[in-house]
Image (spheres, rainbow, N blue to C red):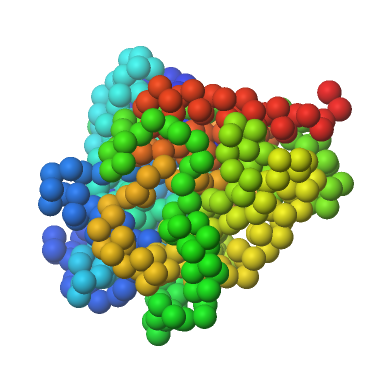
Length: 476
């Protein structure tokens, strides 16, 4: 699965179809009684404040993929509905509750899809505009929080969906693609697809026979909250965060290079995706890391820290990194925002080489894992309550590292979706974010940075320096 903006995706013209999620109960929904996740509560209150000052901050996590052959629209509608019925977080109605965020969940039988035929999209540019507009329809403060559709051609179909960040993280995109394609394949395997009147409404969906029901993100969130309910600012479980804060000067580690951004200001985002290493090169770099006693992911982090230092960065790397909380059990294939954000720091001395930094990075990551039970939002609220209450987004350009091996995502081993793409978008940015991801075609980086000349120059220099560090130990 390639992480790439929709503007840079090559999606051919075709017939536009939409499926709108609608409730079969009263418009208001039931009163909220369930508590939500830490990420969800903060995200929702930020959106509320932004709306109150007429300065909305918008974001989505979308995905698209290809189905080959003539599509069965009834089966596709059933597969899309199956996705929503399968994941409680997509059926939840979110409302403020006693200074927090609560929700109540519609049952699988209380939701349906309304089909709308959108007419022909005659050029790729029209498809791009159509998807841009459709993806941005999701809104943190409005239900539903997912929108779905397809661009249908005679011999192939691009299926897409977009979710507000409130109900999803990046890994959820692969889970959703796997669920949709598996259900669609199950529904169409017994008989060939038949033509469907594109203007006709979708028929009621039967439940496809797919994998065991995954664990609920909302139940996971309740369990996590119960475990942290009694935590106070002096709790020993916060020692790791507290020590990091004291050494760093705050909970948020600054991006160590000047990006030309003003404090408190958001800028238009600039997005790009490029390949850093070929398939052979990333395999060879992984071998180098193993010979040095480390893992590929930590080798990438060490290489990035070295590249930052070579550009004038500090001799101690301090950053935030996402940590997947799903585990390998009931939540492994659950949609939701299962991401904790944790601090990591390690030395990057002036004469240190890749092996030295890799060893220190790996030791630092072991410390991160040992303290992963404390959620970042909880630590933020307890250790910096004034910032927590006032900040709508990260206070300045923050140092951030993310890596994922997309070859190990749900469904990747069976190639259930062709040309799977994830599209991440934010309406404003005050720093630089790099998402490293490995596919069958090599190592890629998706970048979103603030639209300033300095940020553009720093990003180019950093990626070039990073690539040099990665390729120096390779036998080219």
